[in-house]
Amino acid sequence: MPEPTKPEHTPSSQDTGPAAGRPRRRQARGERRIAQLLDAAASVFCTTGYTAASTNAIAREAGVSPGTLYQFFPNKEAIAVELGGRLLHQWRESHGEALNAAALDLPLEELLDAVLDPLIDFNQQNPAFAVLMHGPDTPGQITDEFTTVHLGLLERIETLMSGYLPDTPADEIARVSTMIFVIFKGGLELVMAHEGAQRAAYTDELKKVLLRYLDPILGDALRPA
Image 1 (cartoon, rainbow, N blue to C red):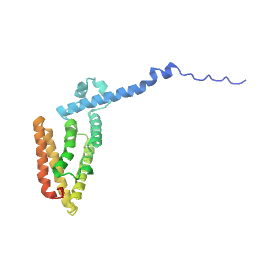
Image 2 (image 1 turned 90 degrees about the vertical axis):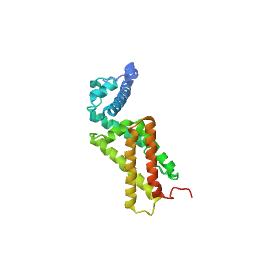
Image 3 (image 1 turned 60 degrees about the horizontal axis):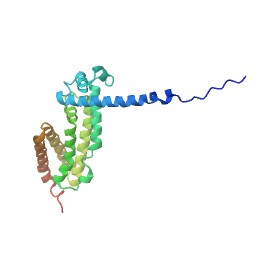
């Protein structure tokens, strides 16, 4: 006696109705909630610093319960690592090529504008970037990633200086490049510590310092023939 054939499966409302899209919608809602929590964390870190921040304060800033926060992040360090990673990704995507070779034929004053303005703008738009970068108790994973960014910037400065000064010894190039980088870091901290007209004034001062330091070193390398 032949086995009865199984009826073909006919799509039902259970397959094609609202339930079919729920996982994707839940995922989208989860991403929005994560973004909400990271925005809140950035605000709290900027207000209190990383060390004094708490998950309760972050949840309160986000307008959610601590229990909701813990559904996505086990602790403050996990939030900071995720936030730091996203900020670094944005930095690399938008301003990571601040020393792009396309700007290298500019006069020194214009070159400083082309290099510094995007870096300063990014820090102004993302103040949590500096908080995490300089925080004494920032998680080691973030510190390591920021160190990698710093080393990459320093290498680009050295490459730039070597292109302008091909006959200069490597140790002198390294020394000048390190000084440029340290001046920029210190100046950026001053810029970020002020707002409005004072911030603009400190930005101008930073550019003046670098201009006066670099102009005698580069000599005619950046001046039109």
